Image 1: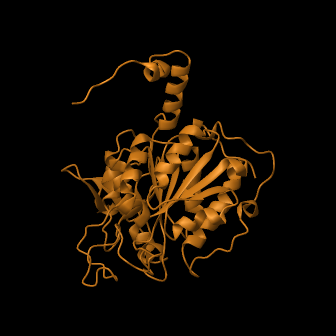
Image 2: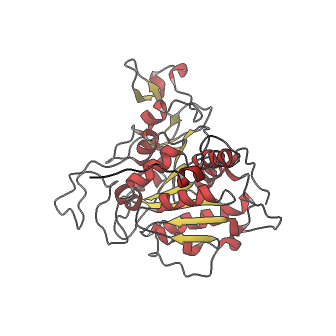
Image 3: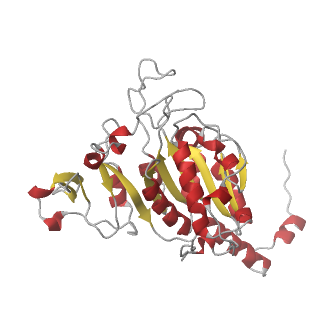
Length: 352
């Protein structure tokens, strides 16, 4: 298997291997302890199958997680890994990215871990554009703690912690990431191995923070949460597959399109009722995230109609960790600022 082309500095400093690798090389000796039928199995298998394409030494790949069902992931990867603190995986990964440019760093998190207690850490990692790949497993529920509603649960969701139905408005992770000016934002589905692999390839090649939301099923506490998008009959009617350079068209026979209405809003229309020139041609590399954000808002949190998957945004901007290292190198070479003078300085203050 040949390595994929990596045109960005994202993995330029990570040592490559001459050994031929397979998915088996990335499977650890640990027993996988998720509930039978959990969507996490599909994601794990896809990631293990994808890793050999990078052509990297396993000892230079790190998976960091927080707390939750998804956060067991590092145990099952035959790489370095860290099962860290609830919601703090992006912060820990940031420190590692700044100090170790020779590592390919992946963060695995869930909708509760990332968007509740970890929300602040997530948005600032996205804002800073740290060279991390964040896989956000979204099953719209707290699974590890046995079925409480999460930040992505739909309004009215009845759970153990909301017996009369949740009154919260749910987060849309893609919209949140785009609002934080993330340079790479994508969405895929746990059971669609081909699509998820394609998204992971682009995420791996990206310099900076790449957020991939993965719609994942919890068959114990929230079974069928995404079934309308996965079912062979209802899926084509509800899933918008974003492809660069292609008109946004979906439906079993391409009968639905996405257009910009006369008032400037984005909306779904009947293909037969509009001119082909009115159909939006998608480009994830557009610098302005406005269109991507509007498309991410098409989906309804209850019916899930018009849910887009694919790469929403993929733009280039220097990563935070690279800029920090450049500042440090400039200072070491005699640039502005003198740390030793600051330490040995005679400035003092008197209080009282």
